[in-house]
Length: 401
Image (cartoon, rainbow, N blue to C red; front, side, top):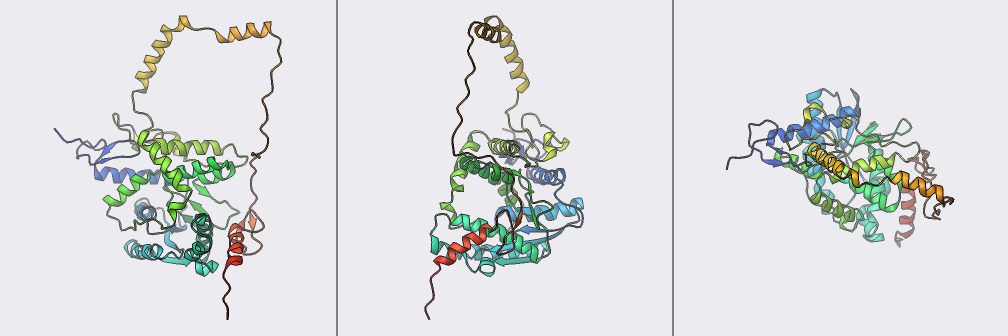
């Protein structure tokens, strides 16, 4: 049996089946398409401007390592004119973060980028090991998430940087959409689906260049590019609520490969229900770029595009459906006229739908200000980090002299 040829170049043997749309590609074409899709996301969303100094949130994991590699490649290839810096956060988790930071230090040398490491103990007086020892594993990810977001911003300010990019991928965004839907948090749903968070009022803005990249494709890219990354999962994360959403996402992906992007797009659509909020989807994804034109049945879609969502043969299926509609036309009942006759004979007033009491409140746009304690930007008088630290400090064991 002859080997399957790459759907793009038609010359090399196909070695990779894309998780996003099952297109069969050779190694070189897969790497090129992956990088082109990230470039498409960056340019269509206007993420950067020439001469901008950008901090890459580097954890040593696959996502941030691939992000650093791709940004370095695209910056040189397309002349973005960016000044790239690696910014790492040391949460203070022994056996996990200390090992991953060694990977980040190697990445800094490999990519020839400056590296800044900021620790929780330096900023908050607590390490995550101490936090877990105090409160237990349940809910510890809430503390870490709040502290980490603020630490990234504080680290960027130390470097004089106003833009931080993170390695959040399509799977991460889809998980967050499901989590916020389960919580009924529409306001947070809008922020989580936006490719850029922060505006002119913010001291530091964050963006997600890998927003439309599948996690599996990031792993494939790192593997075929032979990138150096740390693959051990955080020792505290299995207890996280996000793990349940992740399991559901993986099950849906097995049945329908496009499910991840479908959820992301649905989240973007629902986020527009929040007054004054916009998820800022990739404008270029409204149309299919020439570089990602369909190839026979195996579409090679751009970031978050419609390509790959359906198995193909849509026009044939539509034509068949139209013919069946004509055949059954004589059997159809004119529902509109029937309802009109019933309405004429029955003079009934329409019944109002019952209003659900409690449990739901209108989503309002939050006003950004500054925390009265630490001065960090916050929509509340006291930011989340200070609130959490107050509870931790109350439970801190007193040292007896």
